[in-house]
Length: 147
Image (cartoon, rainbow, N blue to C red):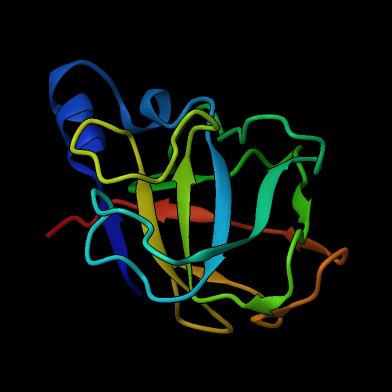
């Protein structure tokens, strides 16, 4: 499972805020193409396939108020979903703000990871996405390693 934290997110958590507060306002964007080497890197020629938001209506993704141990879950009352805008094979994703252009940056708050069917940062029922089809994430959690 590959998860990459941007410099902006790491610095923000160390300087001023919690992970939960730093992730406020985010959507999950799923891309086809080569995953950038870091969350700070430019998206390159990646193609946006899908944006996951609250209830698929464009709302920012919400998290539970409190972590359980070292795990923070998506808000259980919310449905995380979106409609694919392009057809392709999902390979990686980024949690990012709508204002984030995907250009290289050491200040943008981002969380990047791999996408697959099992054992990935984001697991989908299929990585083959079709334009117009709805994709839903029934569960999602972030685990802070303890050691």
